Image (tube, rainbow, N blue to C red):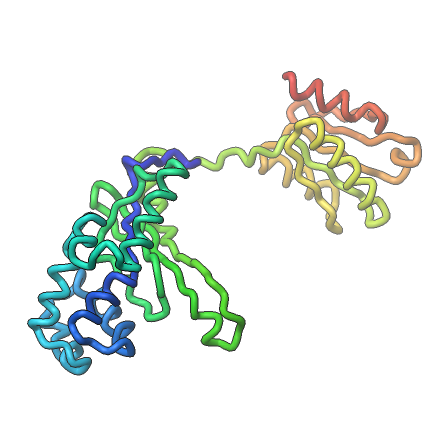
Length: 282
């Protein structure tokens, strides 16, 4: 949770089956559906005159396009149902999606928008776009269902869903809402470091003990010098570094350095859980 809610972001949804059924009713052959979707997707950015030539090459005259756009301006599943009929596969798919959204408790994020078709040809079902409710930013994310894509490349028929998002847009949105994380702290409380490869297993045991006790632990199993590890832990704003060294481990102990005080002590491995529990209480 990064602090955004359904008042900040909405998700427009539609089904490619909607435009497919409309085009079919207008006499457009199925092999032209995908190319038509690509062109219709551009209409949000350019006037119809800019792609009229491409539409005509597909056999879509302006009257057909205008009928199509009339349908795609509907903003409710009920309105689409009146156009396509209650037995429409597109309507049933959208109704099921809305019911699932209610069940998951995310219905307040969802907005039906028949104009969302997505510009890639391989989508086959539900498509979606996340948007800034204030309308100040471009699309945050977009994607949809593509049941035939893997099959096209020689794979087994496999239903799939994918999406892409704009990290720059998300950062701008978080900044505008004043919820951008500062990343001043990694959340790591303790860094565990094995001084040589033979002690990697011991370091894993140590880290596991501390994690079970509730501490957030970063485990270093690399050929690094202790000085590097201390600097790394300091950057993470960790509280302690636990050193798993040959002599101490053979004696059933580990060394723990308190980074704020600069003090280092040895603790028996059997007492690590108690030490971690006491740290959790601070």
